Image (cartoon, rainbow, N blue to C red; front, top):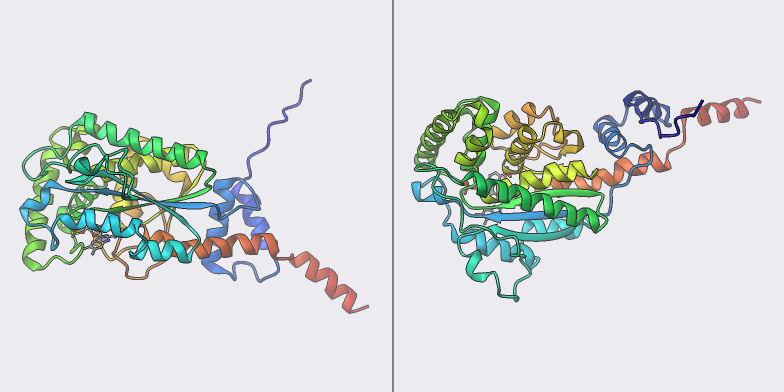
Amino acid sequence: MSQDHRPQPLTNQVIREHLASLAKPPGSLGRLEDLAFELCRIQQTLRPVSSPRKLIVFGGDHGVISEGVTAWPGEITQIMLDTIAKGKAASSALAMATSTSLEVFDVGSFRGGALRHQGSSSVRRDYWMLPGSRNLAQQPAMTVDELEQGLTAGRQIAREVAAQGFRIVAGGEMGIGNTTPAACLTSLICNESGALVVGRGAGADDETLQRKTQVVTQAVERARQHGTGQLRKQLAEVTGVELATLAGFFAESSQLGMVVILDGFIATAAALMAEVLWPESRRNWIAAHCSTEPGHAIALKFLQLDPFLNWQMRLGEGTGALLLMPMLDAACAILSEMTTIAQLQTELVHSRT
Ligand SMILES: O=C(O)c1ccc[n+]([C@@H]2O[C@H](COP(=O)([O-])O)[C@@H](O)[C@H]2O)c1
Ligand SMILES: Cc1cc2nc[nH]c2cc1C
């Protein structure tokens, strides 16, 4: 009889027993043990790695800003993408501090098309596809074909990153106005009211918040009219270019076996889209933190992800994901360096003889 030589999957039980066998009271490293567990489970080894790692920041603009849903002008998207690539933004600083590679893609800023063939910036524009999404208060933000193009671009970028040898990836975003489509997607997918998922984004005042809630509520109502059998049509109504690309990136990164670190509210809204399009993509995801945007906790609960940090952050750009990187190193270190309780018992016996 021929024997099956395929490697047996590493079960959750084996991982738990291994963590319990290390030289400490069982469970005493708290959430660090949960993080170590996740790395073992995803990488299917008791000696996981936390590097090499890379953050991709995806940029896009949003036609809906003409409704007055954000405190900032759209031009800031482009300026911040350049600032991140030049090493002068929060994400650049944290990527440097955590030994994480960083690449910036403009996939849909208003002016990206005009800048596409200028080689002077380190922002990549080879996947640029649209001068922003359309105003989702008035019409579908994207066509189904455009949504598909965004998803495909994100999947292609994930393949590039995997081919470069990265084992841990994070996806971040930069897009003035993008908490509006993120709130729409969260409301639509998690079946929650607009009022519960809308927040102040990058600093909306009371009036802006009220307008934004109305815009989100109405757009989601319109999207729902397509019916659940028309998922892509529903999503295209209320999404954005960087969100679509992120969704493809998250889904394909899982498919390729990389560990995916999720960032804030917008990144998680893109992850929601990936999960409904490619169910079980979430198996390779780790939620770094919970943003102060009220929709974020709702989206994470839907994905059954328990965030590791709660640092009252709401910046985006992948900053929350970057903050978790040193903790991934810590989780790998306990697994590779610690001795076992069994060893302590042996030493105890020796010390008594
Ligand atoms: O990551 C988050 O949780 C987060 C929460 C609020 C705002 N942001 C960032 O702020 C921008 C969107 O805010 P807004 O108000 O213009 O929709 C966008 O560039 C995001 O990266 C990010
Ligand atoms: C300055 C600024 C930086 C950002 N980074 C991510 N979103 C942002 C929004 C603003 C406004």
